[in-house]
Image 1 (tube, one colour):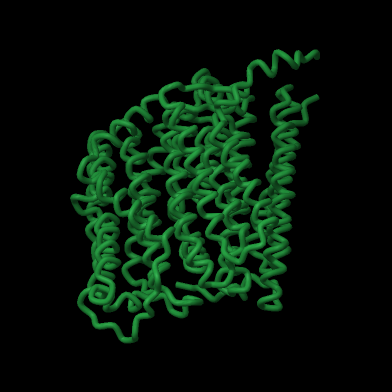
Image 2 (cartoon, one colour; image 1 turned 90 degrees about the horizontal axis):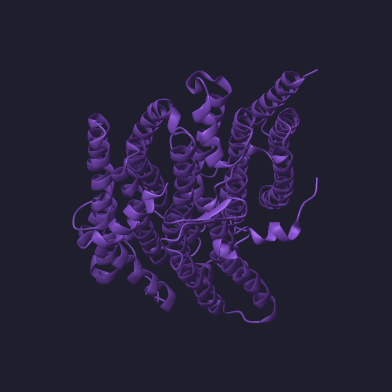
Length: 100
Length: 488
């Protein structure tokens, strides 16, 4: 029994939720969580496809994505803290010094 | 499943990634040196990182013409990769040279800056070499994560902090799209090797109507368009360039843009030549949008860093014209243009570093008023960079644009070339405006007589030579670029 399409639909839905979340929410940490949701939707896609295709490339890719996401989170959270120290806010709308 | 480890190691050829190894070891050494040498002065770090950059450059250049592939075909050292590696090393070297004086003035001369620049450069080199979606992704992220930190490096400064934050959020967002595209491509073709993707697509019955393949390609295109700051994914650029420390804005405008083009070109010309009818039309629209939006918005900027940010968007558009042509002339043009752009744009930013005041209170074009009489040499060099950016002969910018647009004409994209030339003409206005301020307006306030340190003067000399000499005698670099594009 091949459930591939179920997994692909689920990950597409997760990815869309993540994308919409980044665009709609203004709290920087929630935005970042939505980005993580997008990355995990990608991970799910890779794993499902890897299982379906019967080769391991996709699962190896997932390891790399998880590692990179962890590094990204470390840098990102440090940056959020610096931003909070400067502005006492983590609202994306407060990042408004520069506008055209 | 048994794996013969000895056999596996026999397939690894370390020479393929020697430049990356040299640069990353140098970066780690710098991190340690920075901790153990208690010195307020960080100039020695500049020379050390320059040493690493030159070493990596020699190591890369020695592989010219060999075309070696290793790590089961996931990394390659061919002429294309080497040419781009040299572009990245040039921009890293110039960025390192102009950093010291700026960081000293802004009181944030932490030693971590130099290792971060080297790590970002390592990532770019991996992107240019990567022939597997995984290596491209890893290189891209190594570059991006280092750049997020570099953009927000002056973390007590509100603008720099904000620039880092915006770059981080939007960069991570775009990575999500890129990865989803890669996942879909993997699903359709069952492989992550770029060459294998190409042959798998070639065997398909109707690749043009495969929705998953098309969607994957579009998502990857979105991810790269973000990295090279092409419209409509350019929104981050002006804010990030304005807020980031000036030398880092210079670095970001030259190196990562070229890296984006390197991976973009390799991916689309090698993996998706079957779908060229699909992606060329989209790129045509993106190129026109990028050029026009970049130039028209640059016209009304007063902040000089913001102006150069919009101008860098426009320059990505010119390079995309060569991409749309997708022939030898166009791609040669991209390689040549990216190299000369690194020289002229970092040079212009170097002058901004020298003219700016501590904290960059306004950073507007007015700061340049009277420069022509007070510092004639600086003004003359700045004029050279601006002429080159505007694409006037006999500078490198002219030759680059000439090749890009003639590539488009060869393929019959007459309108694209016309729009490009018109845009180029419009851009002269805002470049010349700076020169009008330099030579025709009296300065409103007294110039501080900044001393020009040795590193930054070296950077200025190299940048000036790099934006003038290839314009007068372009044949040598053009030959190298032609050899480089032959292999992809």
